[in-house]
Amino acid sequence: MPVYAREAVIFVIALAVAVTRRRMRSNKKAANPLEGAHKDHLVDTPEQAFSAQSTPAALLVARREISQRLASRAYRVIIILMVLISVGAIAVPKIISSSGSKLTVATTPAGAKELRAVTQRVEKLTGVNLQVSVDASTAIVEQSIRSGKAAIGYADSNLIVKRPFAPNSTSSTKRVVSALSQGIQVDKILSSGAIRKLPSSVVAQILSPKPIKLVYLLPSLAKPKDLSLAIVGVVATFMLLSTYSAWVLMGVIEEKSSRVIEVLLSSISARSLLLGKMVGIGTAALAQAVTAVLAAILTTLAVGSSLLRGAGLEFILLQLMWLLLGYSFYCTVGALAGSLVSKVEDAQSVTAFIQIPLLLSYLASFAVISGNQNYLLKLLAYIPIFSPFLVPIYWSSGQMGLGQVFLAVAVNVLCLYLTYRLASMVYEATVFSRGKRLKFRAAIKLAKLAT
Image 1 (cartoon, rainbow, N blue to C red):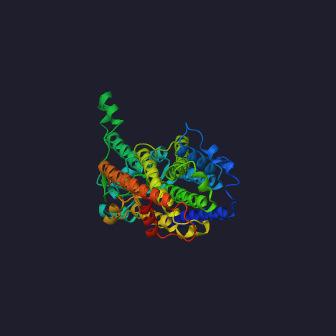
Image 2 (cartoon, rainbow, N blue to C red; image 1 turned 90 degrees about the horizontal axis):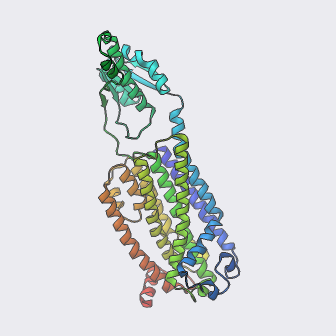
Image 3 (cartoon, helix red, strand yellow; image 1 turned 30 degrees about the vertical axis):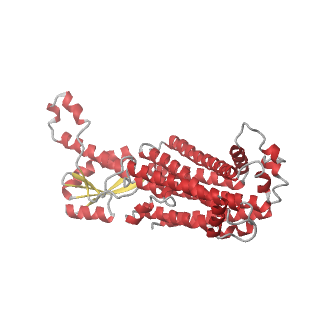
């Protein structure tokens, strides 16, 4: 795994653990929710709480959840982090590419004169300093490029690079190759001495010469076209899913431990309460994601980056869709896990239902980004636990077509429906349970008896 991938893994895991622990500590110190229910717009009595017949009960619960999240410090911290990551992923590569850089161009003795003749013009045009290295033969030039000693080669009237460029690449190497191709061709024609005898129409064609043949020593790597976008998408998805699934889990446990659930269920069904909680927290999550996307778009316009054009923009839209699907699944699992306990102190015993799958998905996504072609990883992309992380990366790298994406969506929607039915049944059956943590099998038996 590359260095940047390991650092990203360590940073995000530490951040998620810190936020989760802080949230749980604050929950333990909280006062009885019944005393402050009016502050969260739960209202003072059940009759006042859900008396508005024109508003669905689940919507009122969702409204309360949104107001709670907007007032949370953790919510604001995550927004700031997501905006900084989005801005940095776009601005930093652009700043680095636009600053003065240096490239080595390897060539043979026969091509050295042609190359040096256009070096100064290419440097002024691209802003890149070129160092010409003369090798004895074409084979040595190719070896220099493979080993990384040179970025570009010129031999036998061909320009040579290691791998093909991405379609929307703005790298300094690609700009230099384009400028060298035109410059060398123009110089060849001008040095022939025959240009003075040519008509003006032919001279005009010389100003836009046919590019020199570009030779690729190795095929393109099967990696996402926008690696930085893929990393940002994985990190943002991990942060949001881990935070909001934990909030759903803690919300379920808090209401059960405080007995506020008994007040609420006198005016609303258990399934409506669960649905409203998920919709409310999901709306808050979507607001964070949209904020990060807007920050990325504004940064792109400000620095003139091409990162969000074409495939980059499609990747972001696809990542947003999978973020919503992933949230729906993981928060349903969080609600299911929260139904098994009735005390905030026991929350740690069920967080593994969420954190372990999230961590495995996070690590798997970086394995794909680093170029791992394991067939098992491609199969995991169809499993709801892994899909929000892996499908956008596989689609961006061209390893998954539109039909396969739709298949993955269909599998996730089906699994989401079955998981929600199970979670709502268990939640409804265990909502008044007290005492030690229920085992999953015992909860299923209670749900069957309740139906």
